[in-house]
Amino acid sequence: MQGQMMNVPLTITTVMEHARLYHAKREIISAIDPQSTHKTTYGEAFERAAQLANALAALGCKPGERIATLAWNDYRHFEIYYALTCSGAILHTINPRLFEEQLVYIINHAEDQWIFLDPDFVPLLENIQDDIPNVKGFITLCDEKQTPKTSLKNIRCYETLLSEQKSDFEWPELDEYSACSLCYTSGTTGNPKGVLYSHRSIVVHALSVSMLDASGFSANDIVLSIVPMFHVHAWGLPFRAPMIGSKLVFPGRYLGNGEVLQNLITKEKVSFAVGVPTIWQLLIDYLEQSGKKIEPLRRAIVGGAACPQSLFDQFSNEYDVELIQGWGMTELGSVGTVNIPGPDFEHLNEAEKKSSVLKQGRPIFGVQVKITDDEGKELPWDGQTSGHLYVRGPNVCNSYFSQESDEFAVNGWFMTGDVANIAADGTVQITDRSKDLIKSGGEWISSIEIENCALTHPQITEAAVIGAKHEKWGERPFLIAVKRAEDSSSAEDILNWFDGKIASWWKPDNILFVEELPHTATGKVSKLSLREKYGEFFIK
Image 1 (cartoon, rainbow, N blue to C red):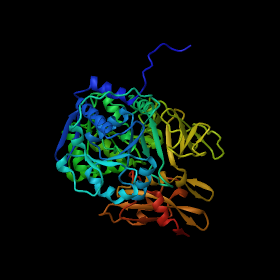
Image 2 (cartoon, rainbow, N blue to C red):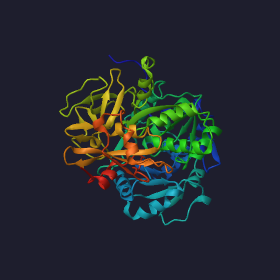
Image 3 (cartoon, rainbow, N blue to C red):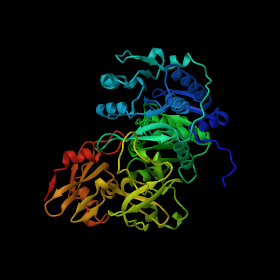
Image 4 (tube, one colour):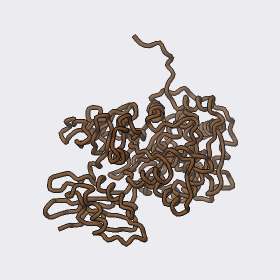
């Protein structure tokens, strides 16, 4: 027997209609230069999305076609999100920080028909346009006066396209399982892989992450999206905020500008924000140098890479901001776990409370987890035993776009490539990436735990650990670190810092100070680049 409820599909169109009806006057703020902002509302944004949908239809765009964006976080990119997905096209957000070879591969593999681009990225596409022959044209995200002179063929102006169209559009009724957006992994090994999201997966993810104990915020919150919209939908914020009715603040091209972020937080009274560790560190550095505060901000989410204890302490002790760890992947639609303190938190001692913030947290609704040994046998949830982390659920990718792979999933579970332990209450702690573990004398050493310890040193600003060859033990931890310019600490001083903080046999055998560490296109430290450069380093 089936239930007798209405069969209304879970599509992004329902999010748009909900926000248009109930949150039409809520503001969207976008930084357009270091001192100025653009203001609009959800109601106005969705009217312009309808104009854009009409313009795309006039250009001959068809449902199911991939249409790309190379764009920053702002109101125009927000409009594109809805115009494409709700009209039946597929939004393909491209990370402009990728290498040109990767961009060419992604655009051709996705078979993108049109590309929306901020003027900043015109030179980038000029360099590769001969290598992307299937692209029909380019649309610059500006008005006619701001459109740069360019050799790009068939270039159109966004504002001109919209001005020629009506602000109403007959949005089609879409299947909730139909594709709506496409995002490629950063491709640290091999070519980037595309994750093709469905309307249903996006809506379910937005609902799950919006729960109070899953980094939820309310209509009374003002939300700053520092995570790029070209990276896994800015962790779902462009869908979650309109669904809830929160005021949404975009930093434009100033994602890594501490001064602009501080100004936005104070001027717009931002109470909730999301960002990766490097962004939060940049903001802290600016606050320390300027002596300014971020008083409206009360809660911030950090994810995308391991976050040092020192950052949690600074946010809490100096700025009264609760910094919360999260974990996710492109293949999960972004967020998989969030470390909101549970009912047992108050029973922990102070040392346990302090260390608990470094864990990745409990899975959001719709994400199941398990850990296994090398043979696939499930391991216990005791908070100690580490194994390969697997996930499954309605938000988890089932296969990569236009790519067959027999190794993608095992019995319906996706292998994340992370090594983790799970506590009895389901709290996940990532101990390393499988490929980043160091095997010394037959025993595994976690590079992440050594890095986290190194980052508690007040003079270390960034750290990475890789395995160096050793004649007796096979591999030993090799620490590569960036320290503050004024610091005079020696390598021995830094190495002595580990005494009593980690297992003695985990202590790095050597340290190399560098001016900066290499990063991937998504802001993570590139262990691959470090291994390529220092992989032959030998410790006697």
